[in-house]
Length: 147
Ligand SMILES: Nc1ncnc2c1ncn2[C@@H]1O[C@H](COP(=O)(O)OP(=O)(O)O)[C@@H](O)[C@H]1O
Ligand SMILES: [Mg+2]
Image (tube, rainbow, N blue to C red; front, side):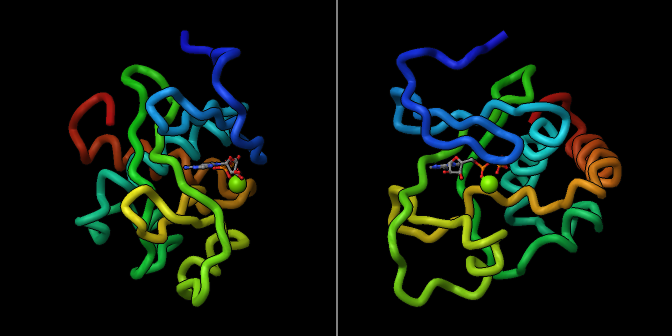
């Protein structure tokens, strides 16, 4: 089981995930509880389907803005732990409309200079079971065990 390393600086504690900076420069998101695990899998799926958004399960698709851009990420194989590109927070003049809607502007700038969302598992706690069904069906569509 992977655990946070004491040498990794903490980047943030969210509602469902603890996030650390890896030596590679990426961040690693450790889930706290089921909602955090679902959020990690959700983001990995959204990234995998980024060019095929209309193939996503309806429940996930409905939560997304057509214009939104997402931080690159993937699950650590055989875990629900997510590795994601680092996103810098800085004041952005003319933050695009989709980013303002991102749960209070949870978007920043990646190393390529693009504005991307970093917390885009956009389901509310009451919908956790629906979100679980959605991610399972997306995983089935991908026809592989791990994303
Ligand atoms: N890709 C990232 N780059 C830089 N900081 C991040 C990134 N993802 C998350 N963080 C930091 O970690 C905090 C918690 O992560 P977040 O994805 O918002 O988790 P939660 O779903 O629990 O709210 C964020 O508020 C932010 O400060
Ligand atoms: Mg958050």
